[in-house]
Length: 299
Image 1: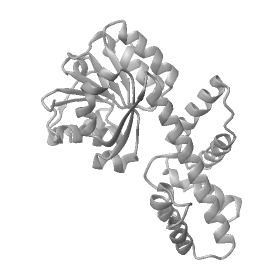
Image 2 (image 1 turned 90 degrees about the vertical axis):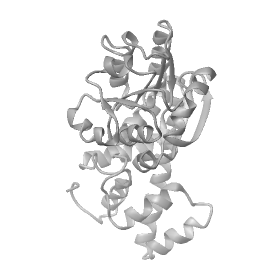
Image 3 (image 1 turned 135 degrees about the vertical axis):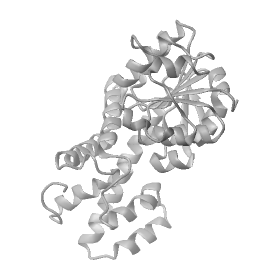
Image 4 (image 1 turned 90 degrees about the horizontal axis):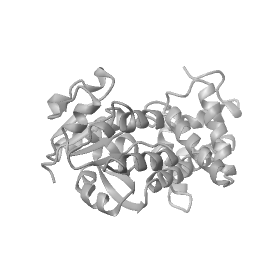
């Protein structure tokens, strides 16, 4: 399968690492992005630049997309100049974006009418996981398509699970993101309470990590919070996009998610104070403002 040519569309923060890892694993990669600057330096990593979506798709055996949101995925996959009109040779498409589950199901039907199998395979693990090829990949779609593309996914991730029919991958990703947001809210609240009580926050984190409160967020993002580092990482704006998808799906299905609703409001507060481009851990600054530890917007 390593001789299978991959058309990779969407060379962003995550996509760049993922495409490079595919090339490092021996897959020929045709890379495309609407932003020419995103393609800089890829030739040195043995990727070939494709001038258009059609060129990246029709010149490949399998297409992988990693796009910002639902409208971009719809344009690339089923738009007038999209993959639907220039399918890859194996007629397999893996969308690794985080987008609407409903839109995914609709696109899968459109593509299937042209004999193209769409898998939704959103990821968790952030830029670090993308760079180290340790992403968790949750895959919806046909079992046959999943079996065919599994070697491709193994070049980008470690935990790779077929979770159900079309749209199931996106729904699992929504569940992942609401847990992330609520957990980070809990970590922020614990640090705010501990600070007001005069505790040594590094020791607070240490003891919490050893008990039932231990979590990925406490392990990986709490140190940045304690260092007052609100910088690079999975951005507040991207988390808000994902929370929007969660809330939309919950409304459509009539599922009350009160903790998710509260977390969404706190993320909106962060963006309102200029934190949108900061890392996810910048949520702690909401609690800084609530406890008068900091005033004003983000620098």
